[in-house]
Image (cartoon, rainbow, N blue to C red; front, side, top):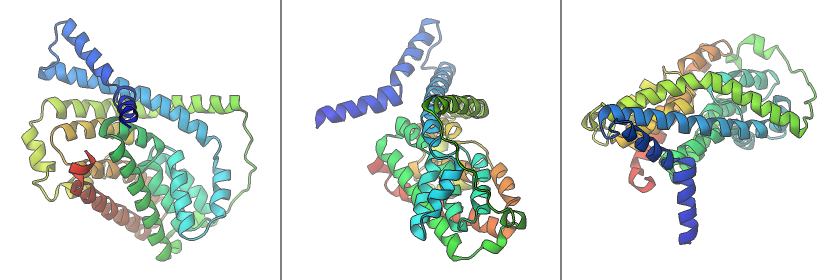
Length: 337
């Protein structure tokens, strides 16, 4: 048992967390005369380490997930979802969301396609919630920073939020609040192409390049903000605003996160820095969920597909769900970390 635990910790810390890289960068900075324990040196070390680590993990994860995703094109996903009914359909839809695009703006076109195909509205909303919030990439990245318990709990609870949110929308019968052009678009059954292994590899490589170009600027911004928080903002400030002494920390983090636009890769370094400065786990995760699920650009896109009442309901369900999750994680902060 101890051997297995040691192997697991090695994978978590040295392979996923790349702590050896942090040590190496620190030695290199000290070697050129820059003290890595100073504010400036620490900021540079944090920036270099997180940019390299997240970029490497990003490329590997996108390749693996895109290869898996090649087996689930939209046409096949529609057929799979069409076989299930009730809450089982919501569960399958939420699970399918874990192997699809990495941000909410990329998920919305698929959501529109599924809705046009006549899939139940609640089922498509379960997909829309889970897709940006709990993809497989987030599981591995969260594991590299917060550990396996937090990462697994985050994904499971994220899926529960997606299933409950979609089910609520289904039972409220909000179909009349979908824009007419989507309801009238209908479904065109196109037989999904059967790809060879070589074609799947090519597809995965193309996804890596395309997603990297789109996401990398947000990684740089996120790591830059994280470096400032980590080395320049006093710990007492963070603890006062986002620590256990502020009962409204989760609400504040959620409301601050909603207007922003980033994906899970851009929020990770900010979350890492906030945790190191004393912010509570649930408060940090609420911020991450709000940014990835309810970003302002994605809500503008969604507004073109649904009427205001349904849009407000979706935002309300997600916001309340995120806050509940945040307070739950804060309650078990000491157990999970």
